[in-house]
Length: 172
Image (tube, rainbow, N blue to C red; front, side):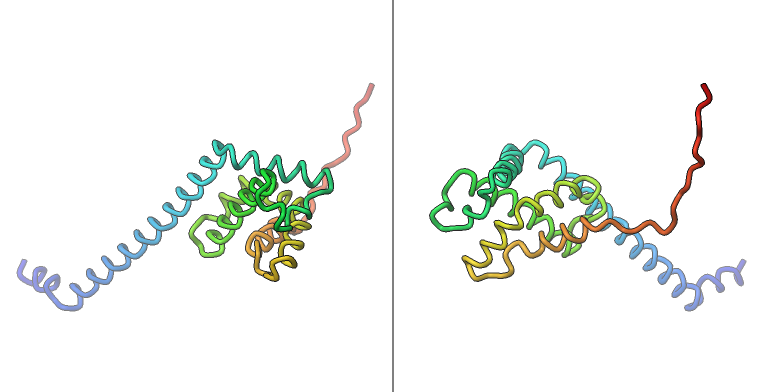
């Protein structure tokens, strides 16, 4: 029994146990951070579903785009208009989301699954407005993160293989 105790009491064994504990603690911390990012991303998605300004911003953006009057919102005389406020709200919302994604605050895969089509369409509808706003304000960084995310999400990855299904003919 004495030799077993002396084996566990040796410095090498104690150091190995300490290192094992450190590794387990680091893995646990990493897992906790990943789960927190996923929870924050899910909370963000659910909060957006109940936000009337969110829905209003998308509606205003679509309405202005279809009317061909989206660019005029970029001029100072139109800043206070309800549509300008709504469009700014939705663009600011997704700019903040895109910054959170680029800073690794949010889990991009969860947000992409929920918002991919929305982000790509918002950028398609708003790009003329944003480009005009950048000129008017002489600031080429306006909504840059949103643009990058929309372009990244809007270019689907090419499949590495094609699945070919056999043609089935029905007999009558």
